[in-house]
Length: 342
Image (cartoon, rainbow, N blue to C red):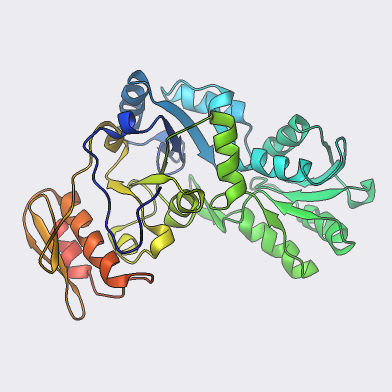
């Protein structure tokens, strides 16, 4: 189970790749960025796999098929098969299949990954609201998705056809910057219909269920860079998580995290899979990790000592999260983070 309210990141005497049987790895910001492998990702995953850890790649992006994702990973030097990739398209296809008869038509607003996942569940993708669909599903369809596709979805949803979404991430990283994600497309149909979709992707339970069903993991560790999808998804699934700082989360966001966004472990990158995690100890009013001690003052977080910057960040998390309890820490941590270069 994930750590409880009022604690900091947890320690582990064993390397994480030995303490957990399966790593459920996010892709963008964890394994690669802009299509290129993140520093240390390839050798770290290679060593984790060689040590017996099962590696599964879990993505909210419903555009590409598992086979296409696996081929990309293999090109980067991370051998993977389609069976190692779990997408929100697969999660939403299962959700739909549980609610409509086998062989039902499903109006697809999205890409090939969504169509392949629906066929895998015995469902028939169709293109028009006039095709008598039993459900409507939206998934990220790439930059060239025509505006008319949203109209087709709106026509069907307004008639009362059940509406599903692979995920509701408002943005998606691209090689040129941040682009609108599937959540933005879902908003278009929501505005036109006044309806709400059933959502499958991270951080919601259908996605976690899909990963467990497909991997058979008994002691999974979620590895991600986003607090509101990866870490919250682990929280909702009742499993442990490792936050890596190679993506969108910085020190300030981490210190302000509410309980569902607090990772079990924090590390710089995927090398964290190969090591133990330092213990954080309570010392009077403060929290000590390595050579650093962090305390929560009246209006800001205080940091004293010296050593590895990550240890200082872990100590600050313990002080901030304990002070915040069930809420989000509002203490100023800027000066303390500056000491760590974070």
